[in-house]
Image (tube, rainbow over all chains, first blue to last red; front, side, top):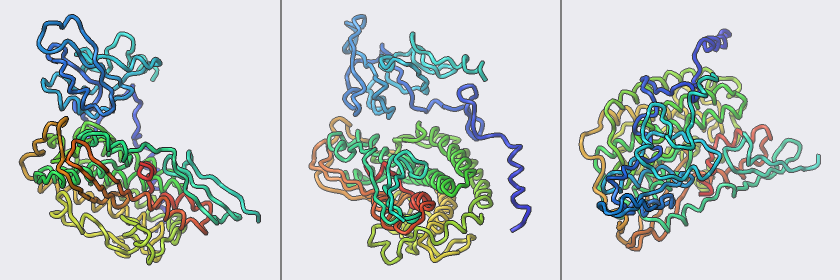
Length: 154
Length: 375
């Protein structure tokens, strides 16, 4: 053992930290690819036109996170006029509902940022509005996690 | 001196999660220890009886938080036994890659927290940071960072994406480089030698009787590893030696084994072994299907009978006993977790006579996972 060995630690002073300034800084993997990728299981997106209201997603959901709401405008179209409403307080993002979906209208998107002080905001009907966008934020009327606001602070 | 009581946990840096050790102390010597759990009970075994065969998959991974994949694997193996399914070769190799990456991540976490219990706080920062690079791989492979829900009965959920093997290789080389640094800072550190050697000894002749498994048993000198004894997934094709005391490679053998020092060094050596296994699996992975066709999930009925499967996790041996009466739900699922024996029987016995300052390092060296005790 060398007496100079502890001095090795000094070289770490010049190194960049592991941590990132979330959410102002983007998260990248080792190869520099931006994360999350499209594979991440976040909030649902549902194509209301393609969905036939078959209730399969609600039956496979073991957390009872999926309930249904009637949409009168869809009356007369193919299938039933009910569409899934997801309670994100219960959802565990396993994605069984999307795998069982016969029309493949239900998807999981890489959106995962949703901040609210009201618990009712976590229960909403996934539509195509809730889809992938640049900042991966959920586009809802009430709840938008504003990454720009945070970026200014840093 | 008068005896007094001491509570370690449930929210304490010296206990790995929501559990408590109730200690009776004379001076600074522990005279009696009692494990007190109950903060994390979620009733998984009962819950699984009311859910379908496929609905249980997202549930089982929650039984062990640091290394969830072994539970998915053991459950999938048990269901495959019931259904009499043969898993495609490609799926077996992808399973090895996932399980070994998860093992590396779990070992990094346990080694880091152990070093923290000795007061070397640099290592937990480094290991947790490096573990995150493995979680990045999981995110791209499975769609989630911690609870992957990826190993399904009959194969794996998705095929390996293109380009991911390169990322895995890059991450493994990075971790190998970092391990050398860990060795300098921690594994060849005087503090580690002086404090860990001979502490928290499990008597060698009692280890099997007490139900010790995994790295803790291998540190006692028994070459017991399910991956070698009863190869599952593609472990039969992997070339590896079981790490056990006293064959500690480049590391010094400074005690008689069975102690905290040997347990941690065995874990360190198994990281090397896992890295080599992931590389072998990536090299030998054949082309083909990644999953068998499932029956309709809502009407899936497994044939009546029972199945037992066991896998080697970073904590020890996991066993799943699954009983089916031919209906769409299991009648009974029993989980045999390694932490139950390590955290309760073994810890309570070996803590007797230990110093208060050594209690947390003994507990971390056993690598106890409270969610697995309570289930």
